[in-house]
Length: 140
Image 1: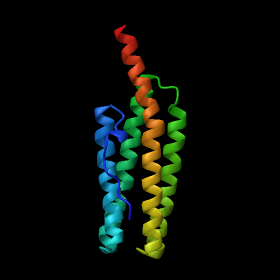
Image 2: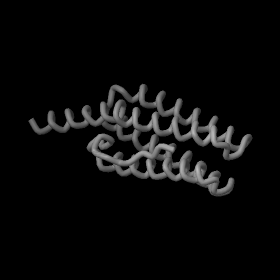
Image 3: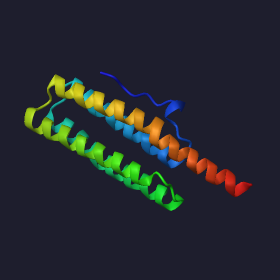
């Protein structure tokens, strides 16, 4: 299964958000590894629940920062976050119904990997550019 390795392409230049993204990536990799190694339902359940909780925490922090900055793309971010959480919940439900099957593990891994890298490199990077422009504008 694919793992996400942190690199400069994923950095948006905001220390708090970057640290939260690193923690999120670690948990995504933990879920993938647990399912791939069939570590048992309890471990996978614990990791999925933590991922779900941490994702909610991260999205709330990110959206609060965007709100405070007056970011015009906030509603798009909120919709994107909401869609992610809904899909994650569906994947969790599939896990509870089917168990740790190989196809489900691959679906979770593919979805999470693709969504997170696309989201960070796209919408989150746009926010970083916005913050940078604000900071530069305040200096000049």
